[in-house]
Length: 188
Figure 1 (spheres, rainbow, N blue to C red):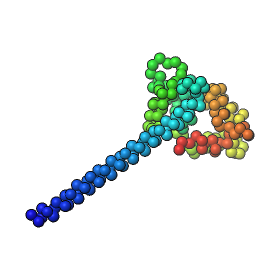
Figure 2: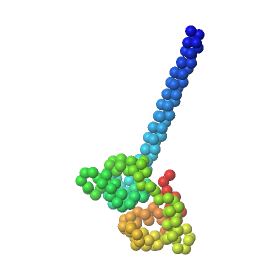
Figure 3: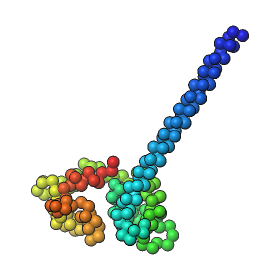
Figure 4: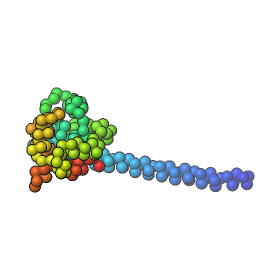
């Protein structure tokens, strides 16, 4: 009987420990879920901000031609084929030429959370810009940039070029300081 009594407090302590561990596990699980919710909310905020830059009419729609620019502004670098696949996922019904924020938000949030389009590493971007910088001065002029981006490789459209120039060029010098620009492109 003395043995049983000696055991009883241990069992209570064990039960209390299990309850404490269970409570701690619940708190940790809630913290993890909250962190995920916060991460999703932050990603959605960035998506909405990028979308609104291209929403000319303020009606929560953008032209399908702007989707590539929006996705790239979010630090993703899909191929044109991947952009078309993304558009097919967003435009399930009859294609209208415009994408509504609500449809785009859910698809691109999943893309960003899944890291579907791997970003180009910073050193690769730097090497590419340095190759274009013939004088090795740390910047590329507007004229050089337009020449490279519209005349070589997969050429930018006039609209894409205007979008890039408006965000990439230093307004005072009309040049692209590529180290600073790369920092803007890199996703935190």
